[in-house]
Length: 182
Image (tube, rainbow, N blue to C red):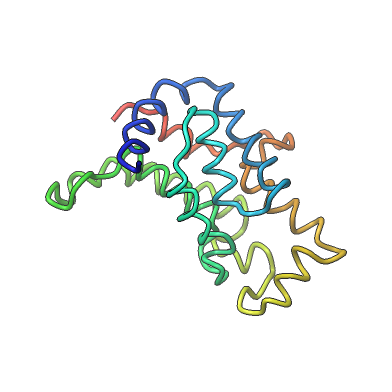
């Protein structure tokens, strides 16, 4: 199953994500997935899977723990998912390949982080959302309470790279890296 995911991901990202319309579709779907179901990392992965025309339930389930910065307020799940997708496209296949095989992913990962941090003023979910993720009552109030619309919209916009709501600033490092030739 996951071998198929890696093979299909490699093939389809090159051919499909070179289209700007497909890249915009990923951002739009990620935004709407979050609005519908919550969870930045799974919203982004499902959007990629839909546009690329395949699904892998193992990776969908695994990325579920990245929401809320690993449910700990640490690195934003949207950023982490972008890094994982870049690694899936450009990372090394085996430890024996050494550090040199990791080098193609360095620049795209750094570009994504350099784009993300100024865009959202932090890379930490707790700072971006203003939530103490170690207090489940605070998390529930922020995302499920009567005043949750603002927090929910903010995270949905991050999942969609802000493009779904017309800011015009998509996730350039993710889509460029995924569409690039290695």
